[in-house]
Image (cartoon, rainbow, N blue to C red; front, side, top):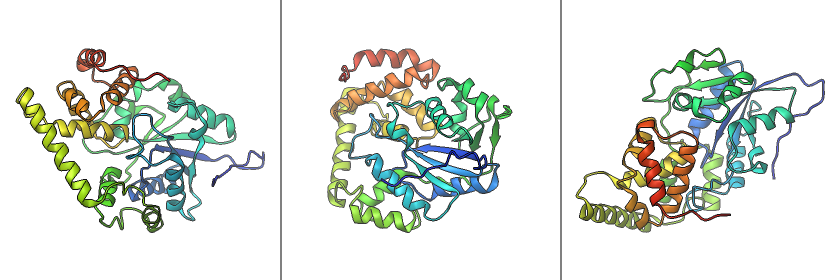
Length: 313
C-alpha cells in the first residue's frame, strides 16, 4: 500500500493543511483543479484528499474498493508535492464523522493546522453536522461555490473563508456512465487515471448493449408499475437514481429537495429494485444527521417505519 507520512520531528515547520473529503469514484479534473486552486490561492500550504472507506449505502457494482480509489488519487496527483492522498479513514470506525477524523488528524500531527474544504451547499447544512461548533472553534473552513446555493449566516463566521474557486460541473457518475458505454473519458480525468481504469476494467461491469437494455427495462418497469398504481407523473426513476447521487455527494440542493419530497410516493419502486433496505438505512442516517427538510421530517419518519427492517450486524 502506498502511504504518505508527515514527520513529527520538532524541526518540521508548521503547515496549514486543507482536507478535501470524498469517495473520489473516480477522482477527476474537477477535484484536482479545486485542490490546486486551494493550495495556490489561499493560506493553505497543502491539500489532502481524504478518501472515504467503503460506504455501507452503496453496492460494490457502483463503488470501487477504497484502496482502488486511493490508488487512482495517487496516480492523479503525480508529482505535485502540494497535494497528497490520505487513507486515514480506512482504519476509523464506520461511519466516521468529520469531527472524529479531524480529532484523529490533530492528535497524529499536532504540529500542523488542519482546515476543511467544502462546498457552499454543505455550508448551508453545516449547523446540522455532529459537533459543528467544536469544528468551527478549532478549524477553519474554506468554501468553494456551488450552483443553486444562496448565502447563509455562516458565510460571515470568522472561521469561514469564501473562495472564488472555478465552478466545474463534472460528475463522477457521468464519468462512470461514459466508461460503461465504452466512450472516452479523456480530459475528464488525468491520463494516468484513464489508463488505470482501462487496464483494470474499472466501472465496466456491463457492456454498452447490456447497459442500454437494463436502463431501458428499468425505466419502463418503473414508469409502468407506478402509473398503474397511482397515475402520477413523478419521475421515480430519477428519485431512485438520486439516492446514489446524494450518497456520493454529487446531488445539488435542488435534487436533494426533490428526493426527499418524492421518495415516499416512489417507495414501491425501491422495492421493485430490491433497494428498500438500502433506502431505509439511508433515511435513518439522514434523520439522525438532521439532513431531512424539517417540513418533511414527519413523512420521512413514517416511511422509515413502513420499510422492511435492515439487517443487524
